[in-house]
Image (tube, rainbow over all chains, first blue to last red; front, side, top):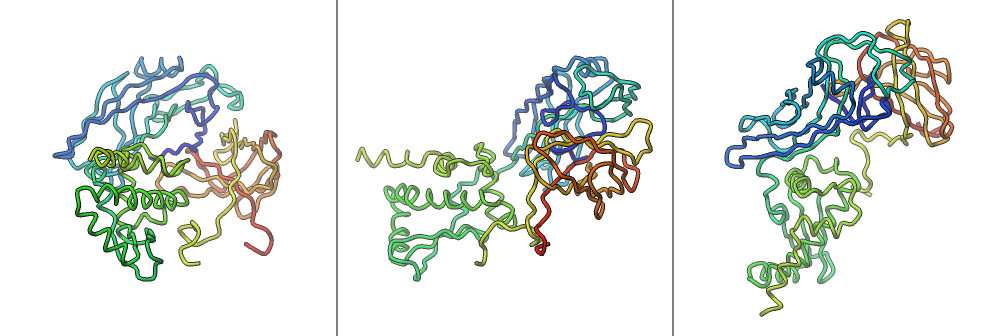
Length: 275
Length: 115
């Protein structure tokens, strides 16, 4: 089953994306404990449900709380029951890799005849009848990044190339490759290669070349991430963004986002000042 | 310019979406399974094409609208003039019975000669 923020049900459903109910909220907080050695995952949850009628259905066993788990890389598309009001769920090693979507839902376990929950939008015109399995609440989707991709150093998905057509001392970023290519004028290319191998040169390259390159990539992604989905650099880059809490679709400052992704690269300049 | 613009996956022209508020599509009481009541409003003033997508599966299927009490039906879609803040209540009939969840999408028609 697939539920998006825009899904509309033929009966009232509690969610923050509709006004089906004037009062009440349903939220689930997740925290993931990942075994990076074998890929196993423990997902802890804490449920908040503040609509009295739906809460009563859950506590008397007439409704259940669960989470739709989707992982397109492992073809997992499961509904897992969540213990009330908190608990944890175990996932086998390898069953979830890379991007995992979690959509919490509440559904009824038995038919409900002439259900008249409080705060229901009057457009539903009175009592509603629900069938076994009907969804009565859904919460915001949570996206996790599972696996090693998020640990990949960003610098490893870039490739430095020389470009004799560029003006002297200029660089150019080309994301339309499997690795993000940083092209440098030939004399600059030679200098950067020397600096990269030096203890005090690499901070300069990080701040003077990789930092603006990451900003440029974020600019491209902000305009439309889909066009790069088939590039090999895209998955680890996006995994890093998710891991660091950077939403590429709503970046207001690429400078700020790049500093987050590169772990405040100006920090690497500090030892140079004390020499 | 090669590579310029964000484009779309299929190369089709990008439609200008209209943001709907409080949209819902509920069964008509004492009506056949194909009869629905569509509620929608928008903050914009626009001629809108409205489509209803059957969701639940990975790729939503469009449901064909065959009649509507307000607006006009063309090619299975509803064409309706929206006014800012005005709540529309439209009785529609679908080509087939469907009782599951939906997504309701609206967009501005492309200017004459471009579509």
